[in-house]
Amino acid sequence: MASQSSYFVHYNIKNQPLGEEFTMNEGLKLDNIAKFFVGNGLPHFDRSSILWGYIDAKLWQYTLFSGFAVFDIKNFLIYFSSEEIILIGITTLGDFSQTIIKIPMNDITHLNLKTGLIQSKLKFTFNNENYIFKIPNFVVVAKWQKANLVTITTTYINP
Figure 1: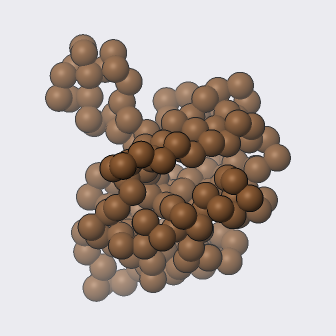
Figure 2: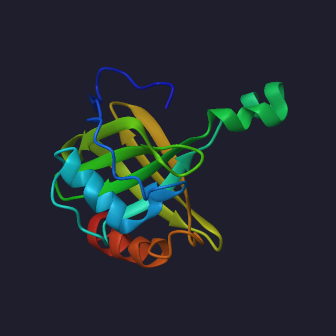
């Protein structure tokens, strides 16, 4: 999200280690996400209200930088609640990054989810800027993704 401006509420993540037993790809395990929510003072964690998605690099970046454009892909856990959407940064290796972004639901317009065979696209407008998240319908290391996609669609996007 190169256009992150002062409209977003940014939080610095507290340096609370999750424990020595955590290794790569720990940001996609529901138990670790629940611990992360508690450790960072986020609202009560509902296991059926979270998705993994990413903001892809722009076409001009792929054209100009070729394969190096993948370094501009931003991975997020997208948490839905009735009051806000919380974006939690995830590294390329699937660990938590140093980013938490809260977006109030009242400020979001044109919330839409287009479901495809392999991936879906979550689109919304916030402060006159369009945001597009690509969301795989199935993730091998996050088996909860497919069921949560249905739950979020029926609860928050098309109630």
